[in-house]
Image (tube, rainbow, N blue to C red; front, side, top):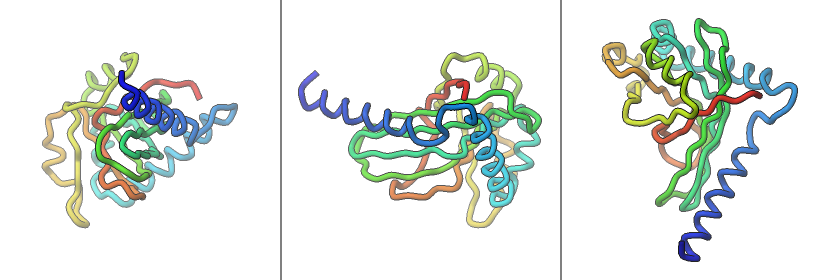
Length: 185
């Protein structure tokens, strides 16, 4: 690895480590803090994204990541913590981390939810040592002021992602390439 590549790698690794320290913290109240943020994010999503509650009703489980912080300057990363809910009850806690490379500068925060539309997709997610979001994730987007739409419910993909609550200077947020790991807060 050249000196320039090594330096860029170290900057990216440092940014990711710093982001890992952001958010919910580790301690005796970690799960309570995550639960509170998840409840607020779920309520925001249901109130502001028409059709999201119906999508959740049809899903086998929903992973809600209430706060993802992303930063980058050439190299970057994102990190956040959330909870997997089945029948509106939390069953596990997860972290989400992503490293990014390329032309980028800035920071943003956003929330997202993964809707596991089949029992198999939920089971695969829960059994994995570290699940990475890839091309099997379908993004549900809504048009200006509209519901998620009938086509959202006709999607045959096993996992549907909804990104919401974006604020910051980086344009666009995606879960593709994000790695999810079960945690004990």
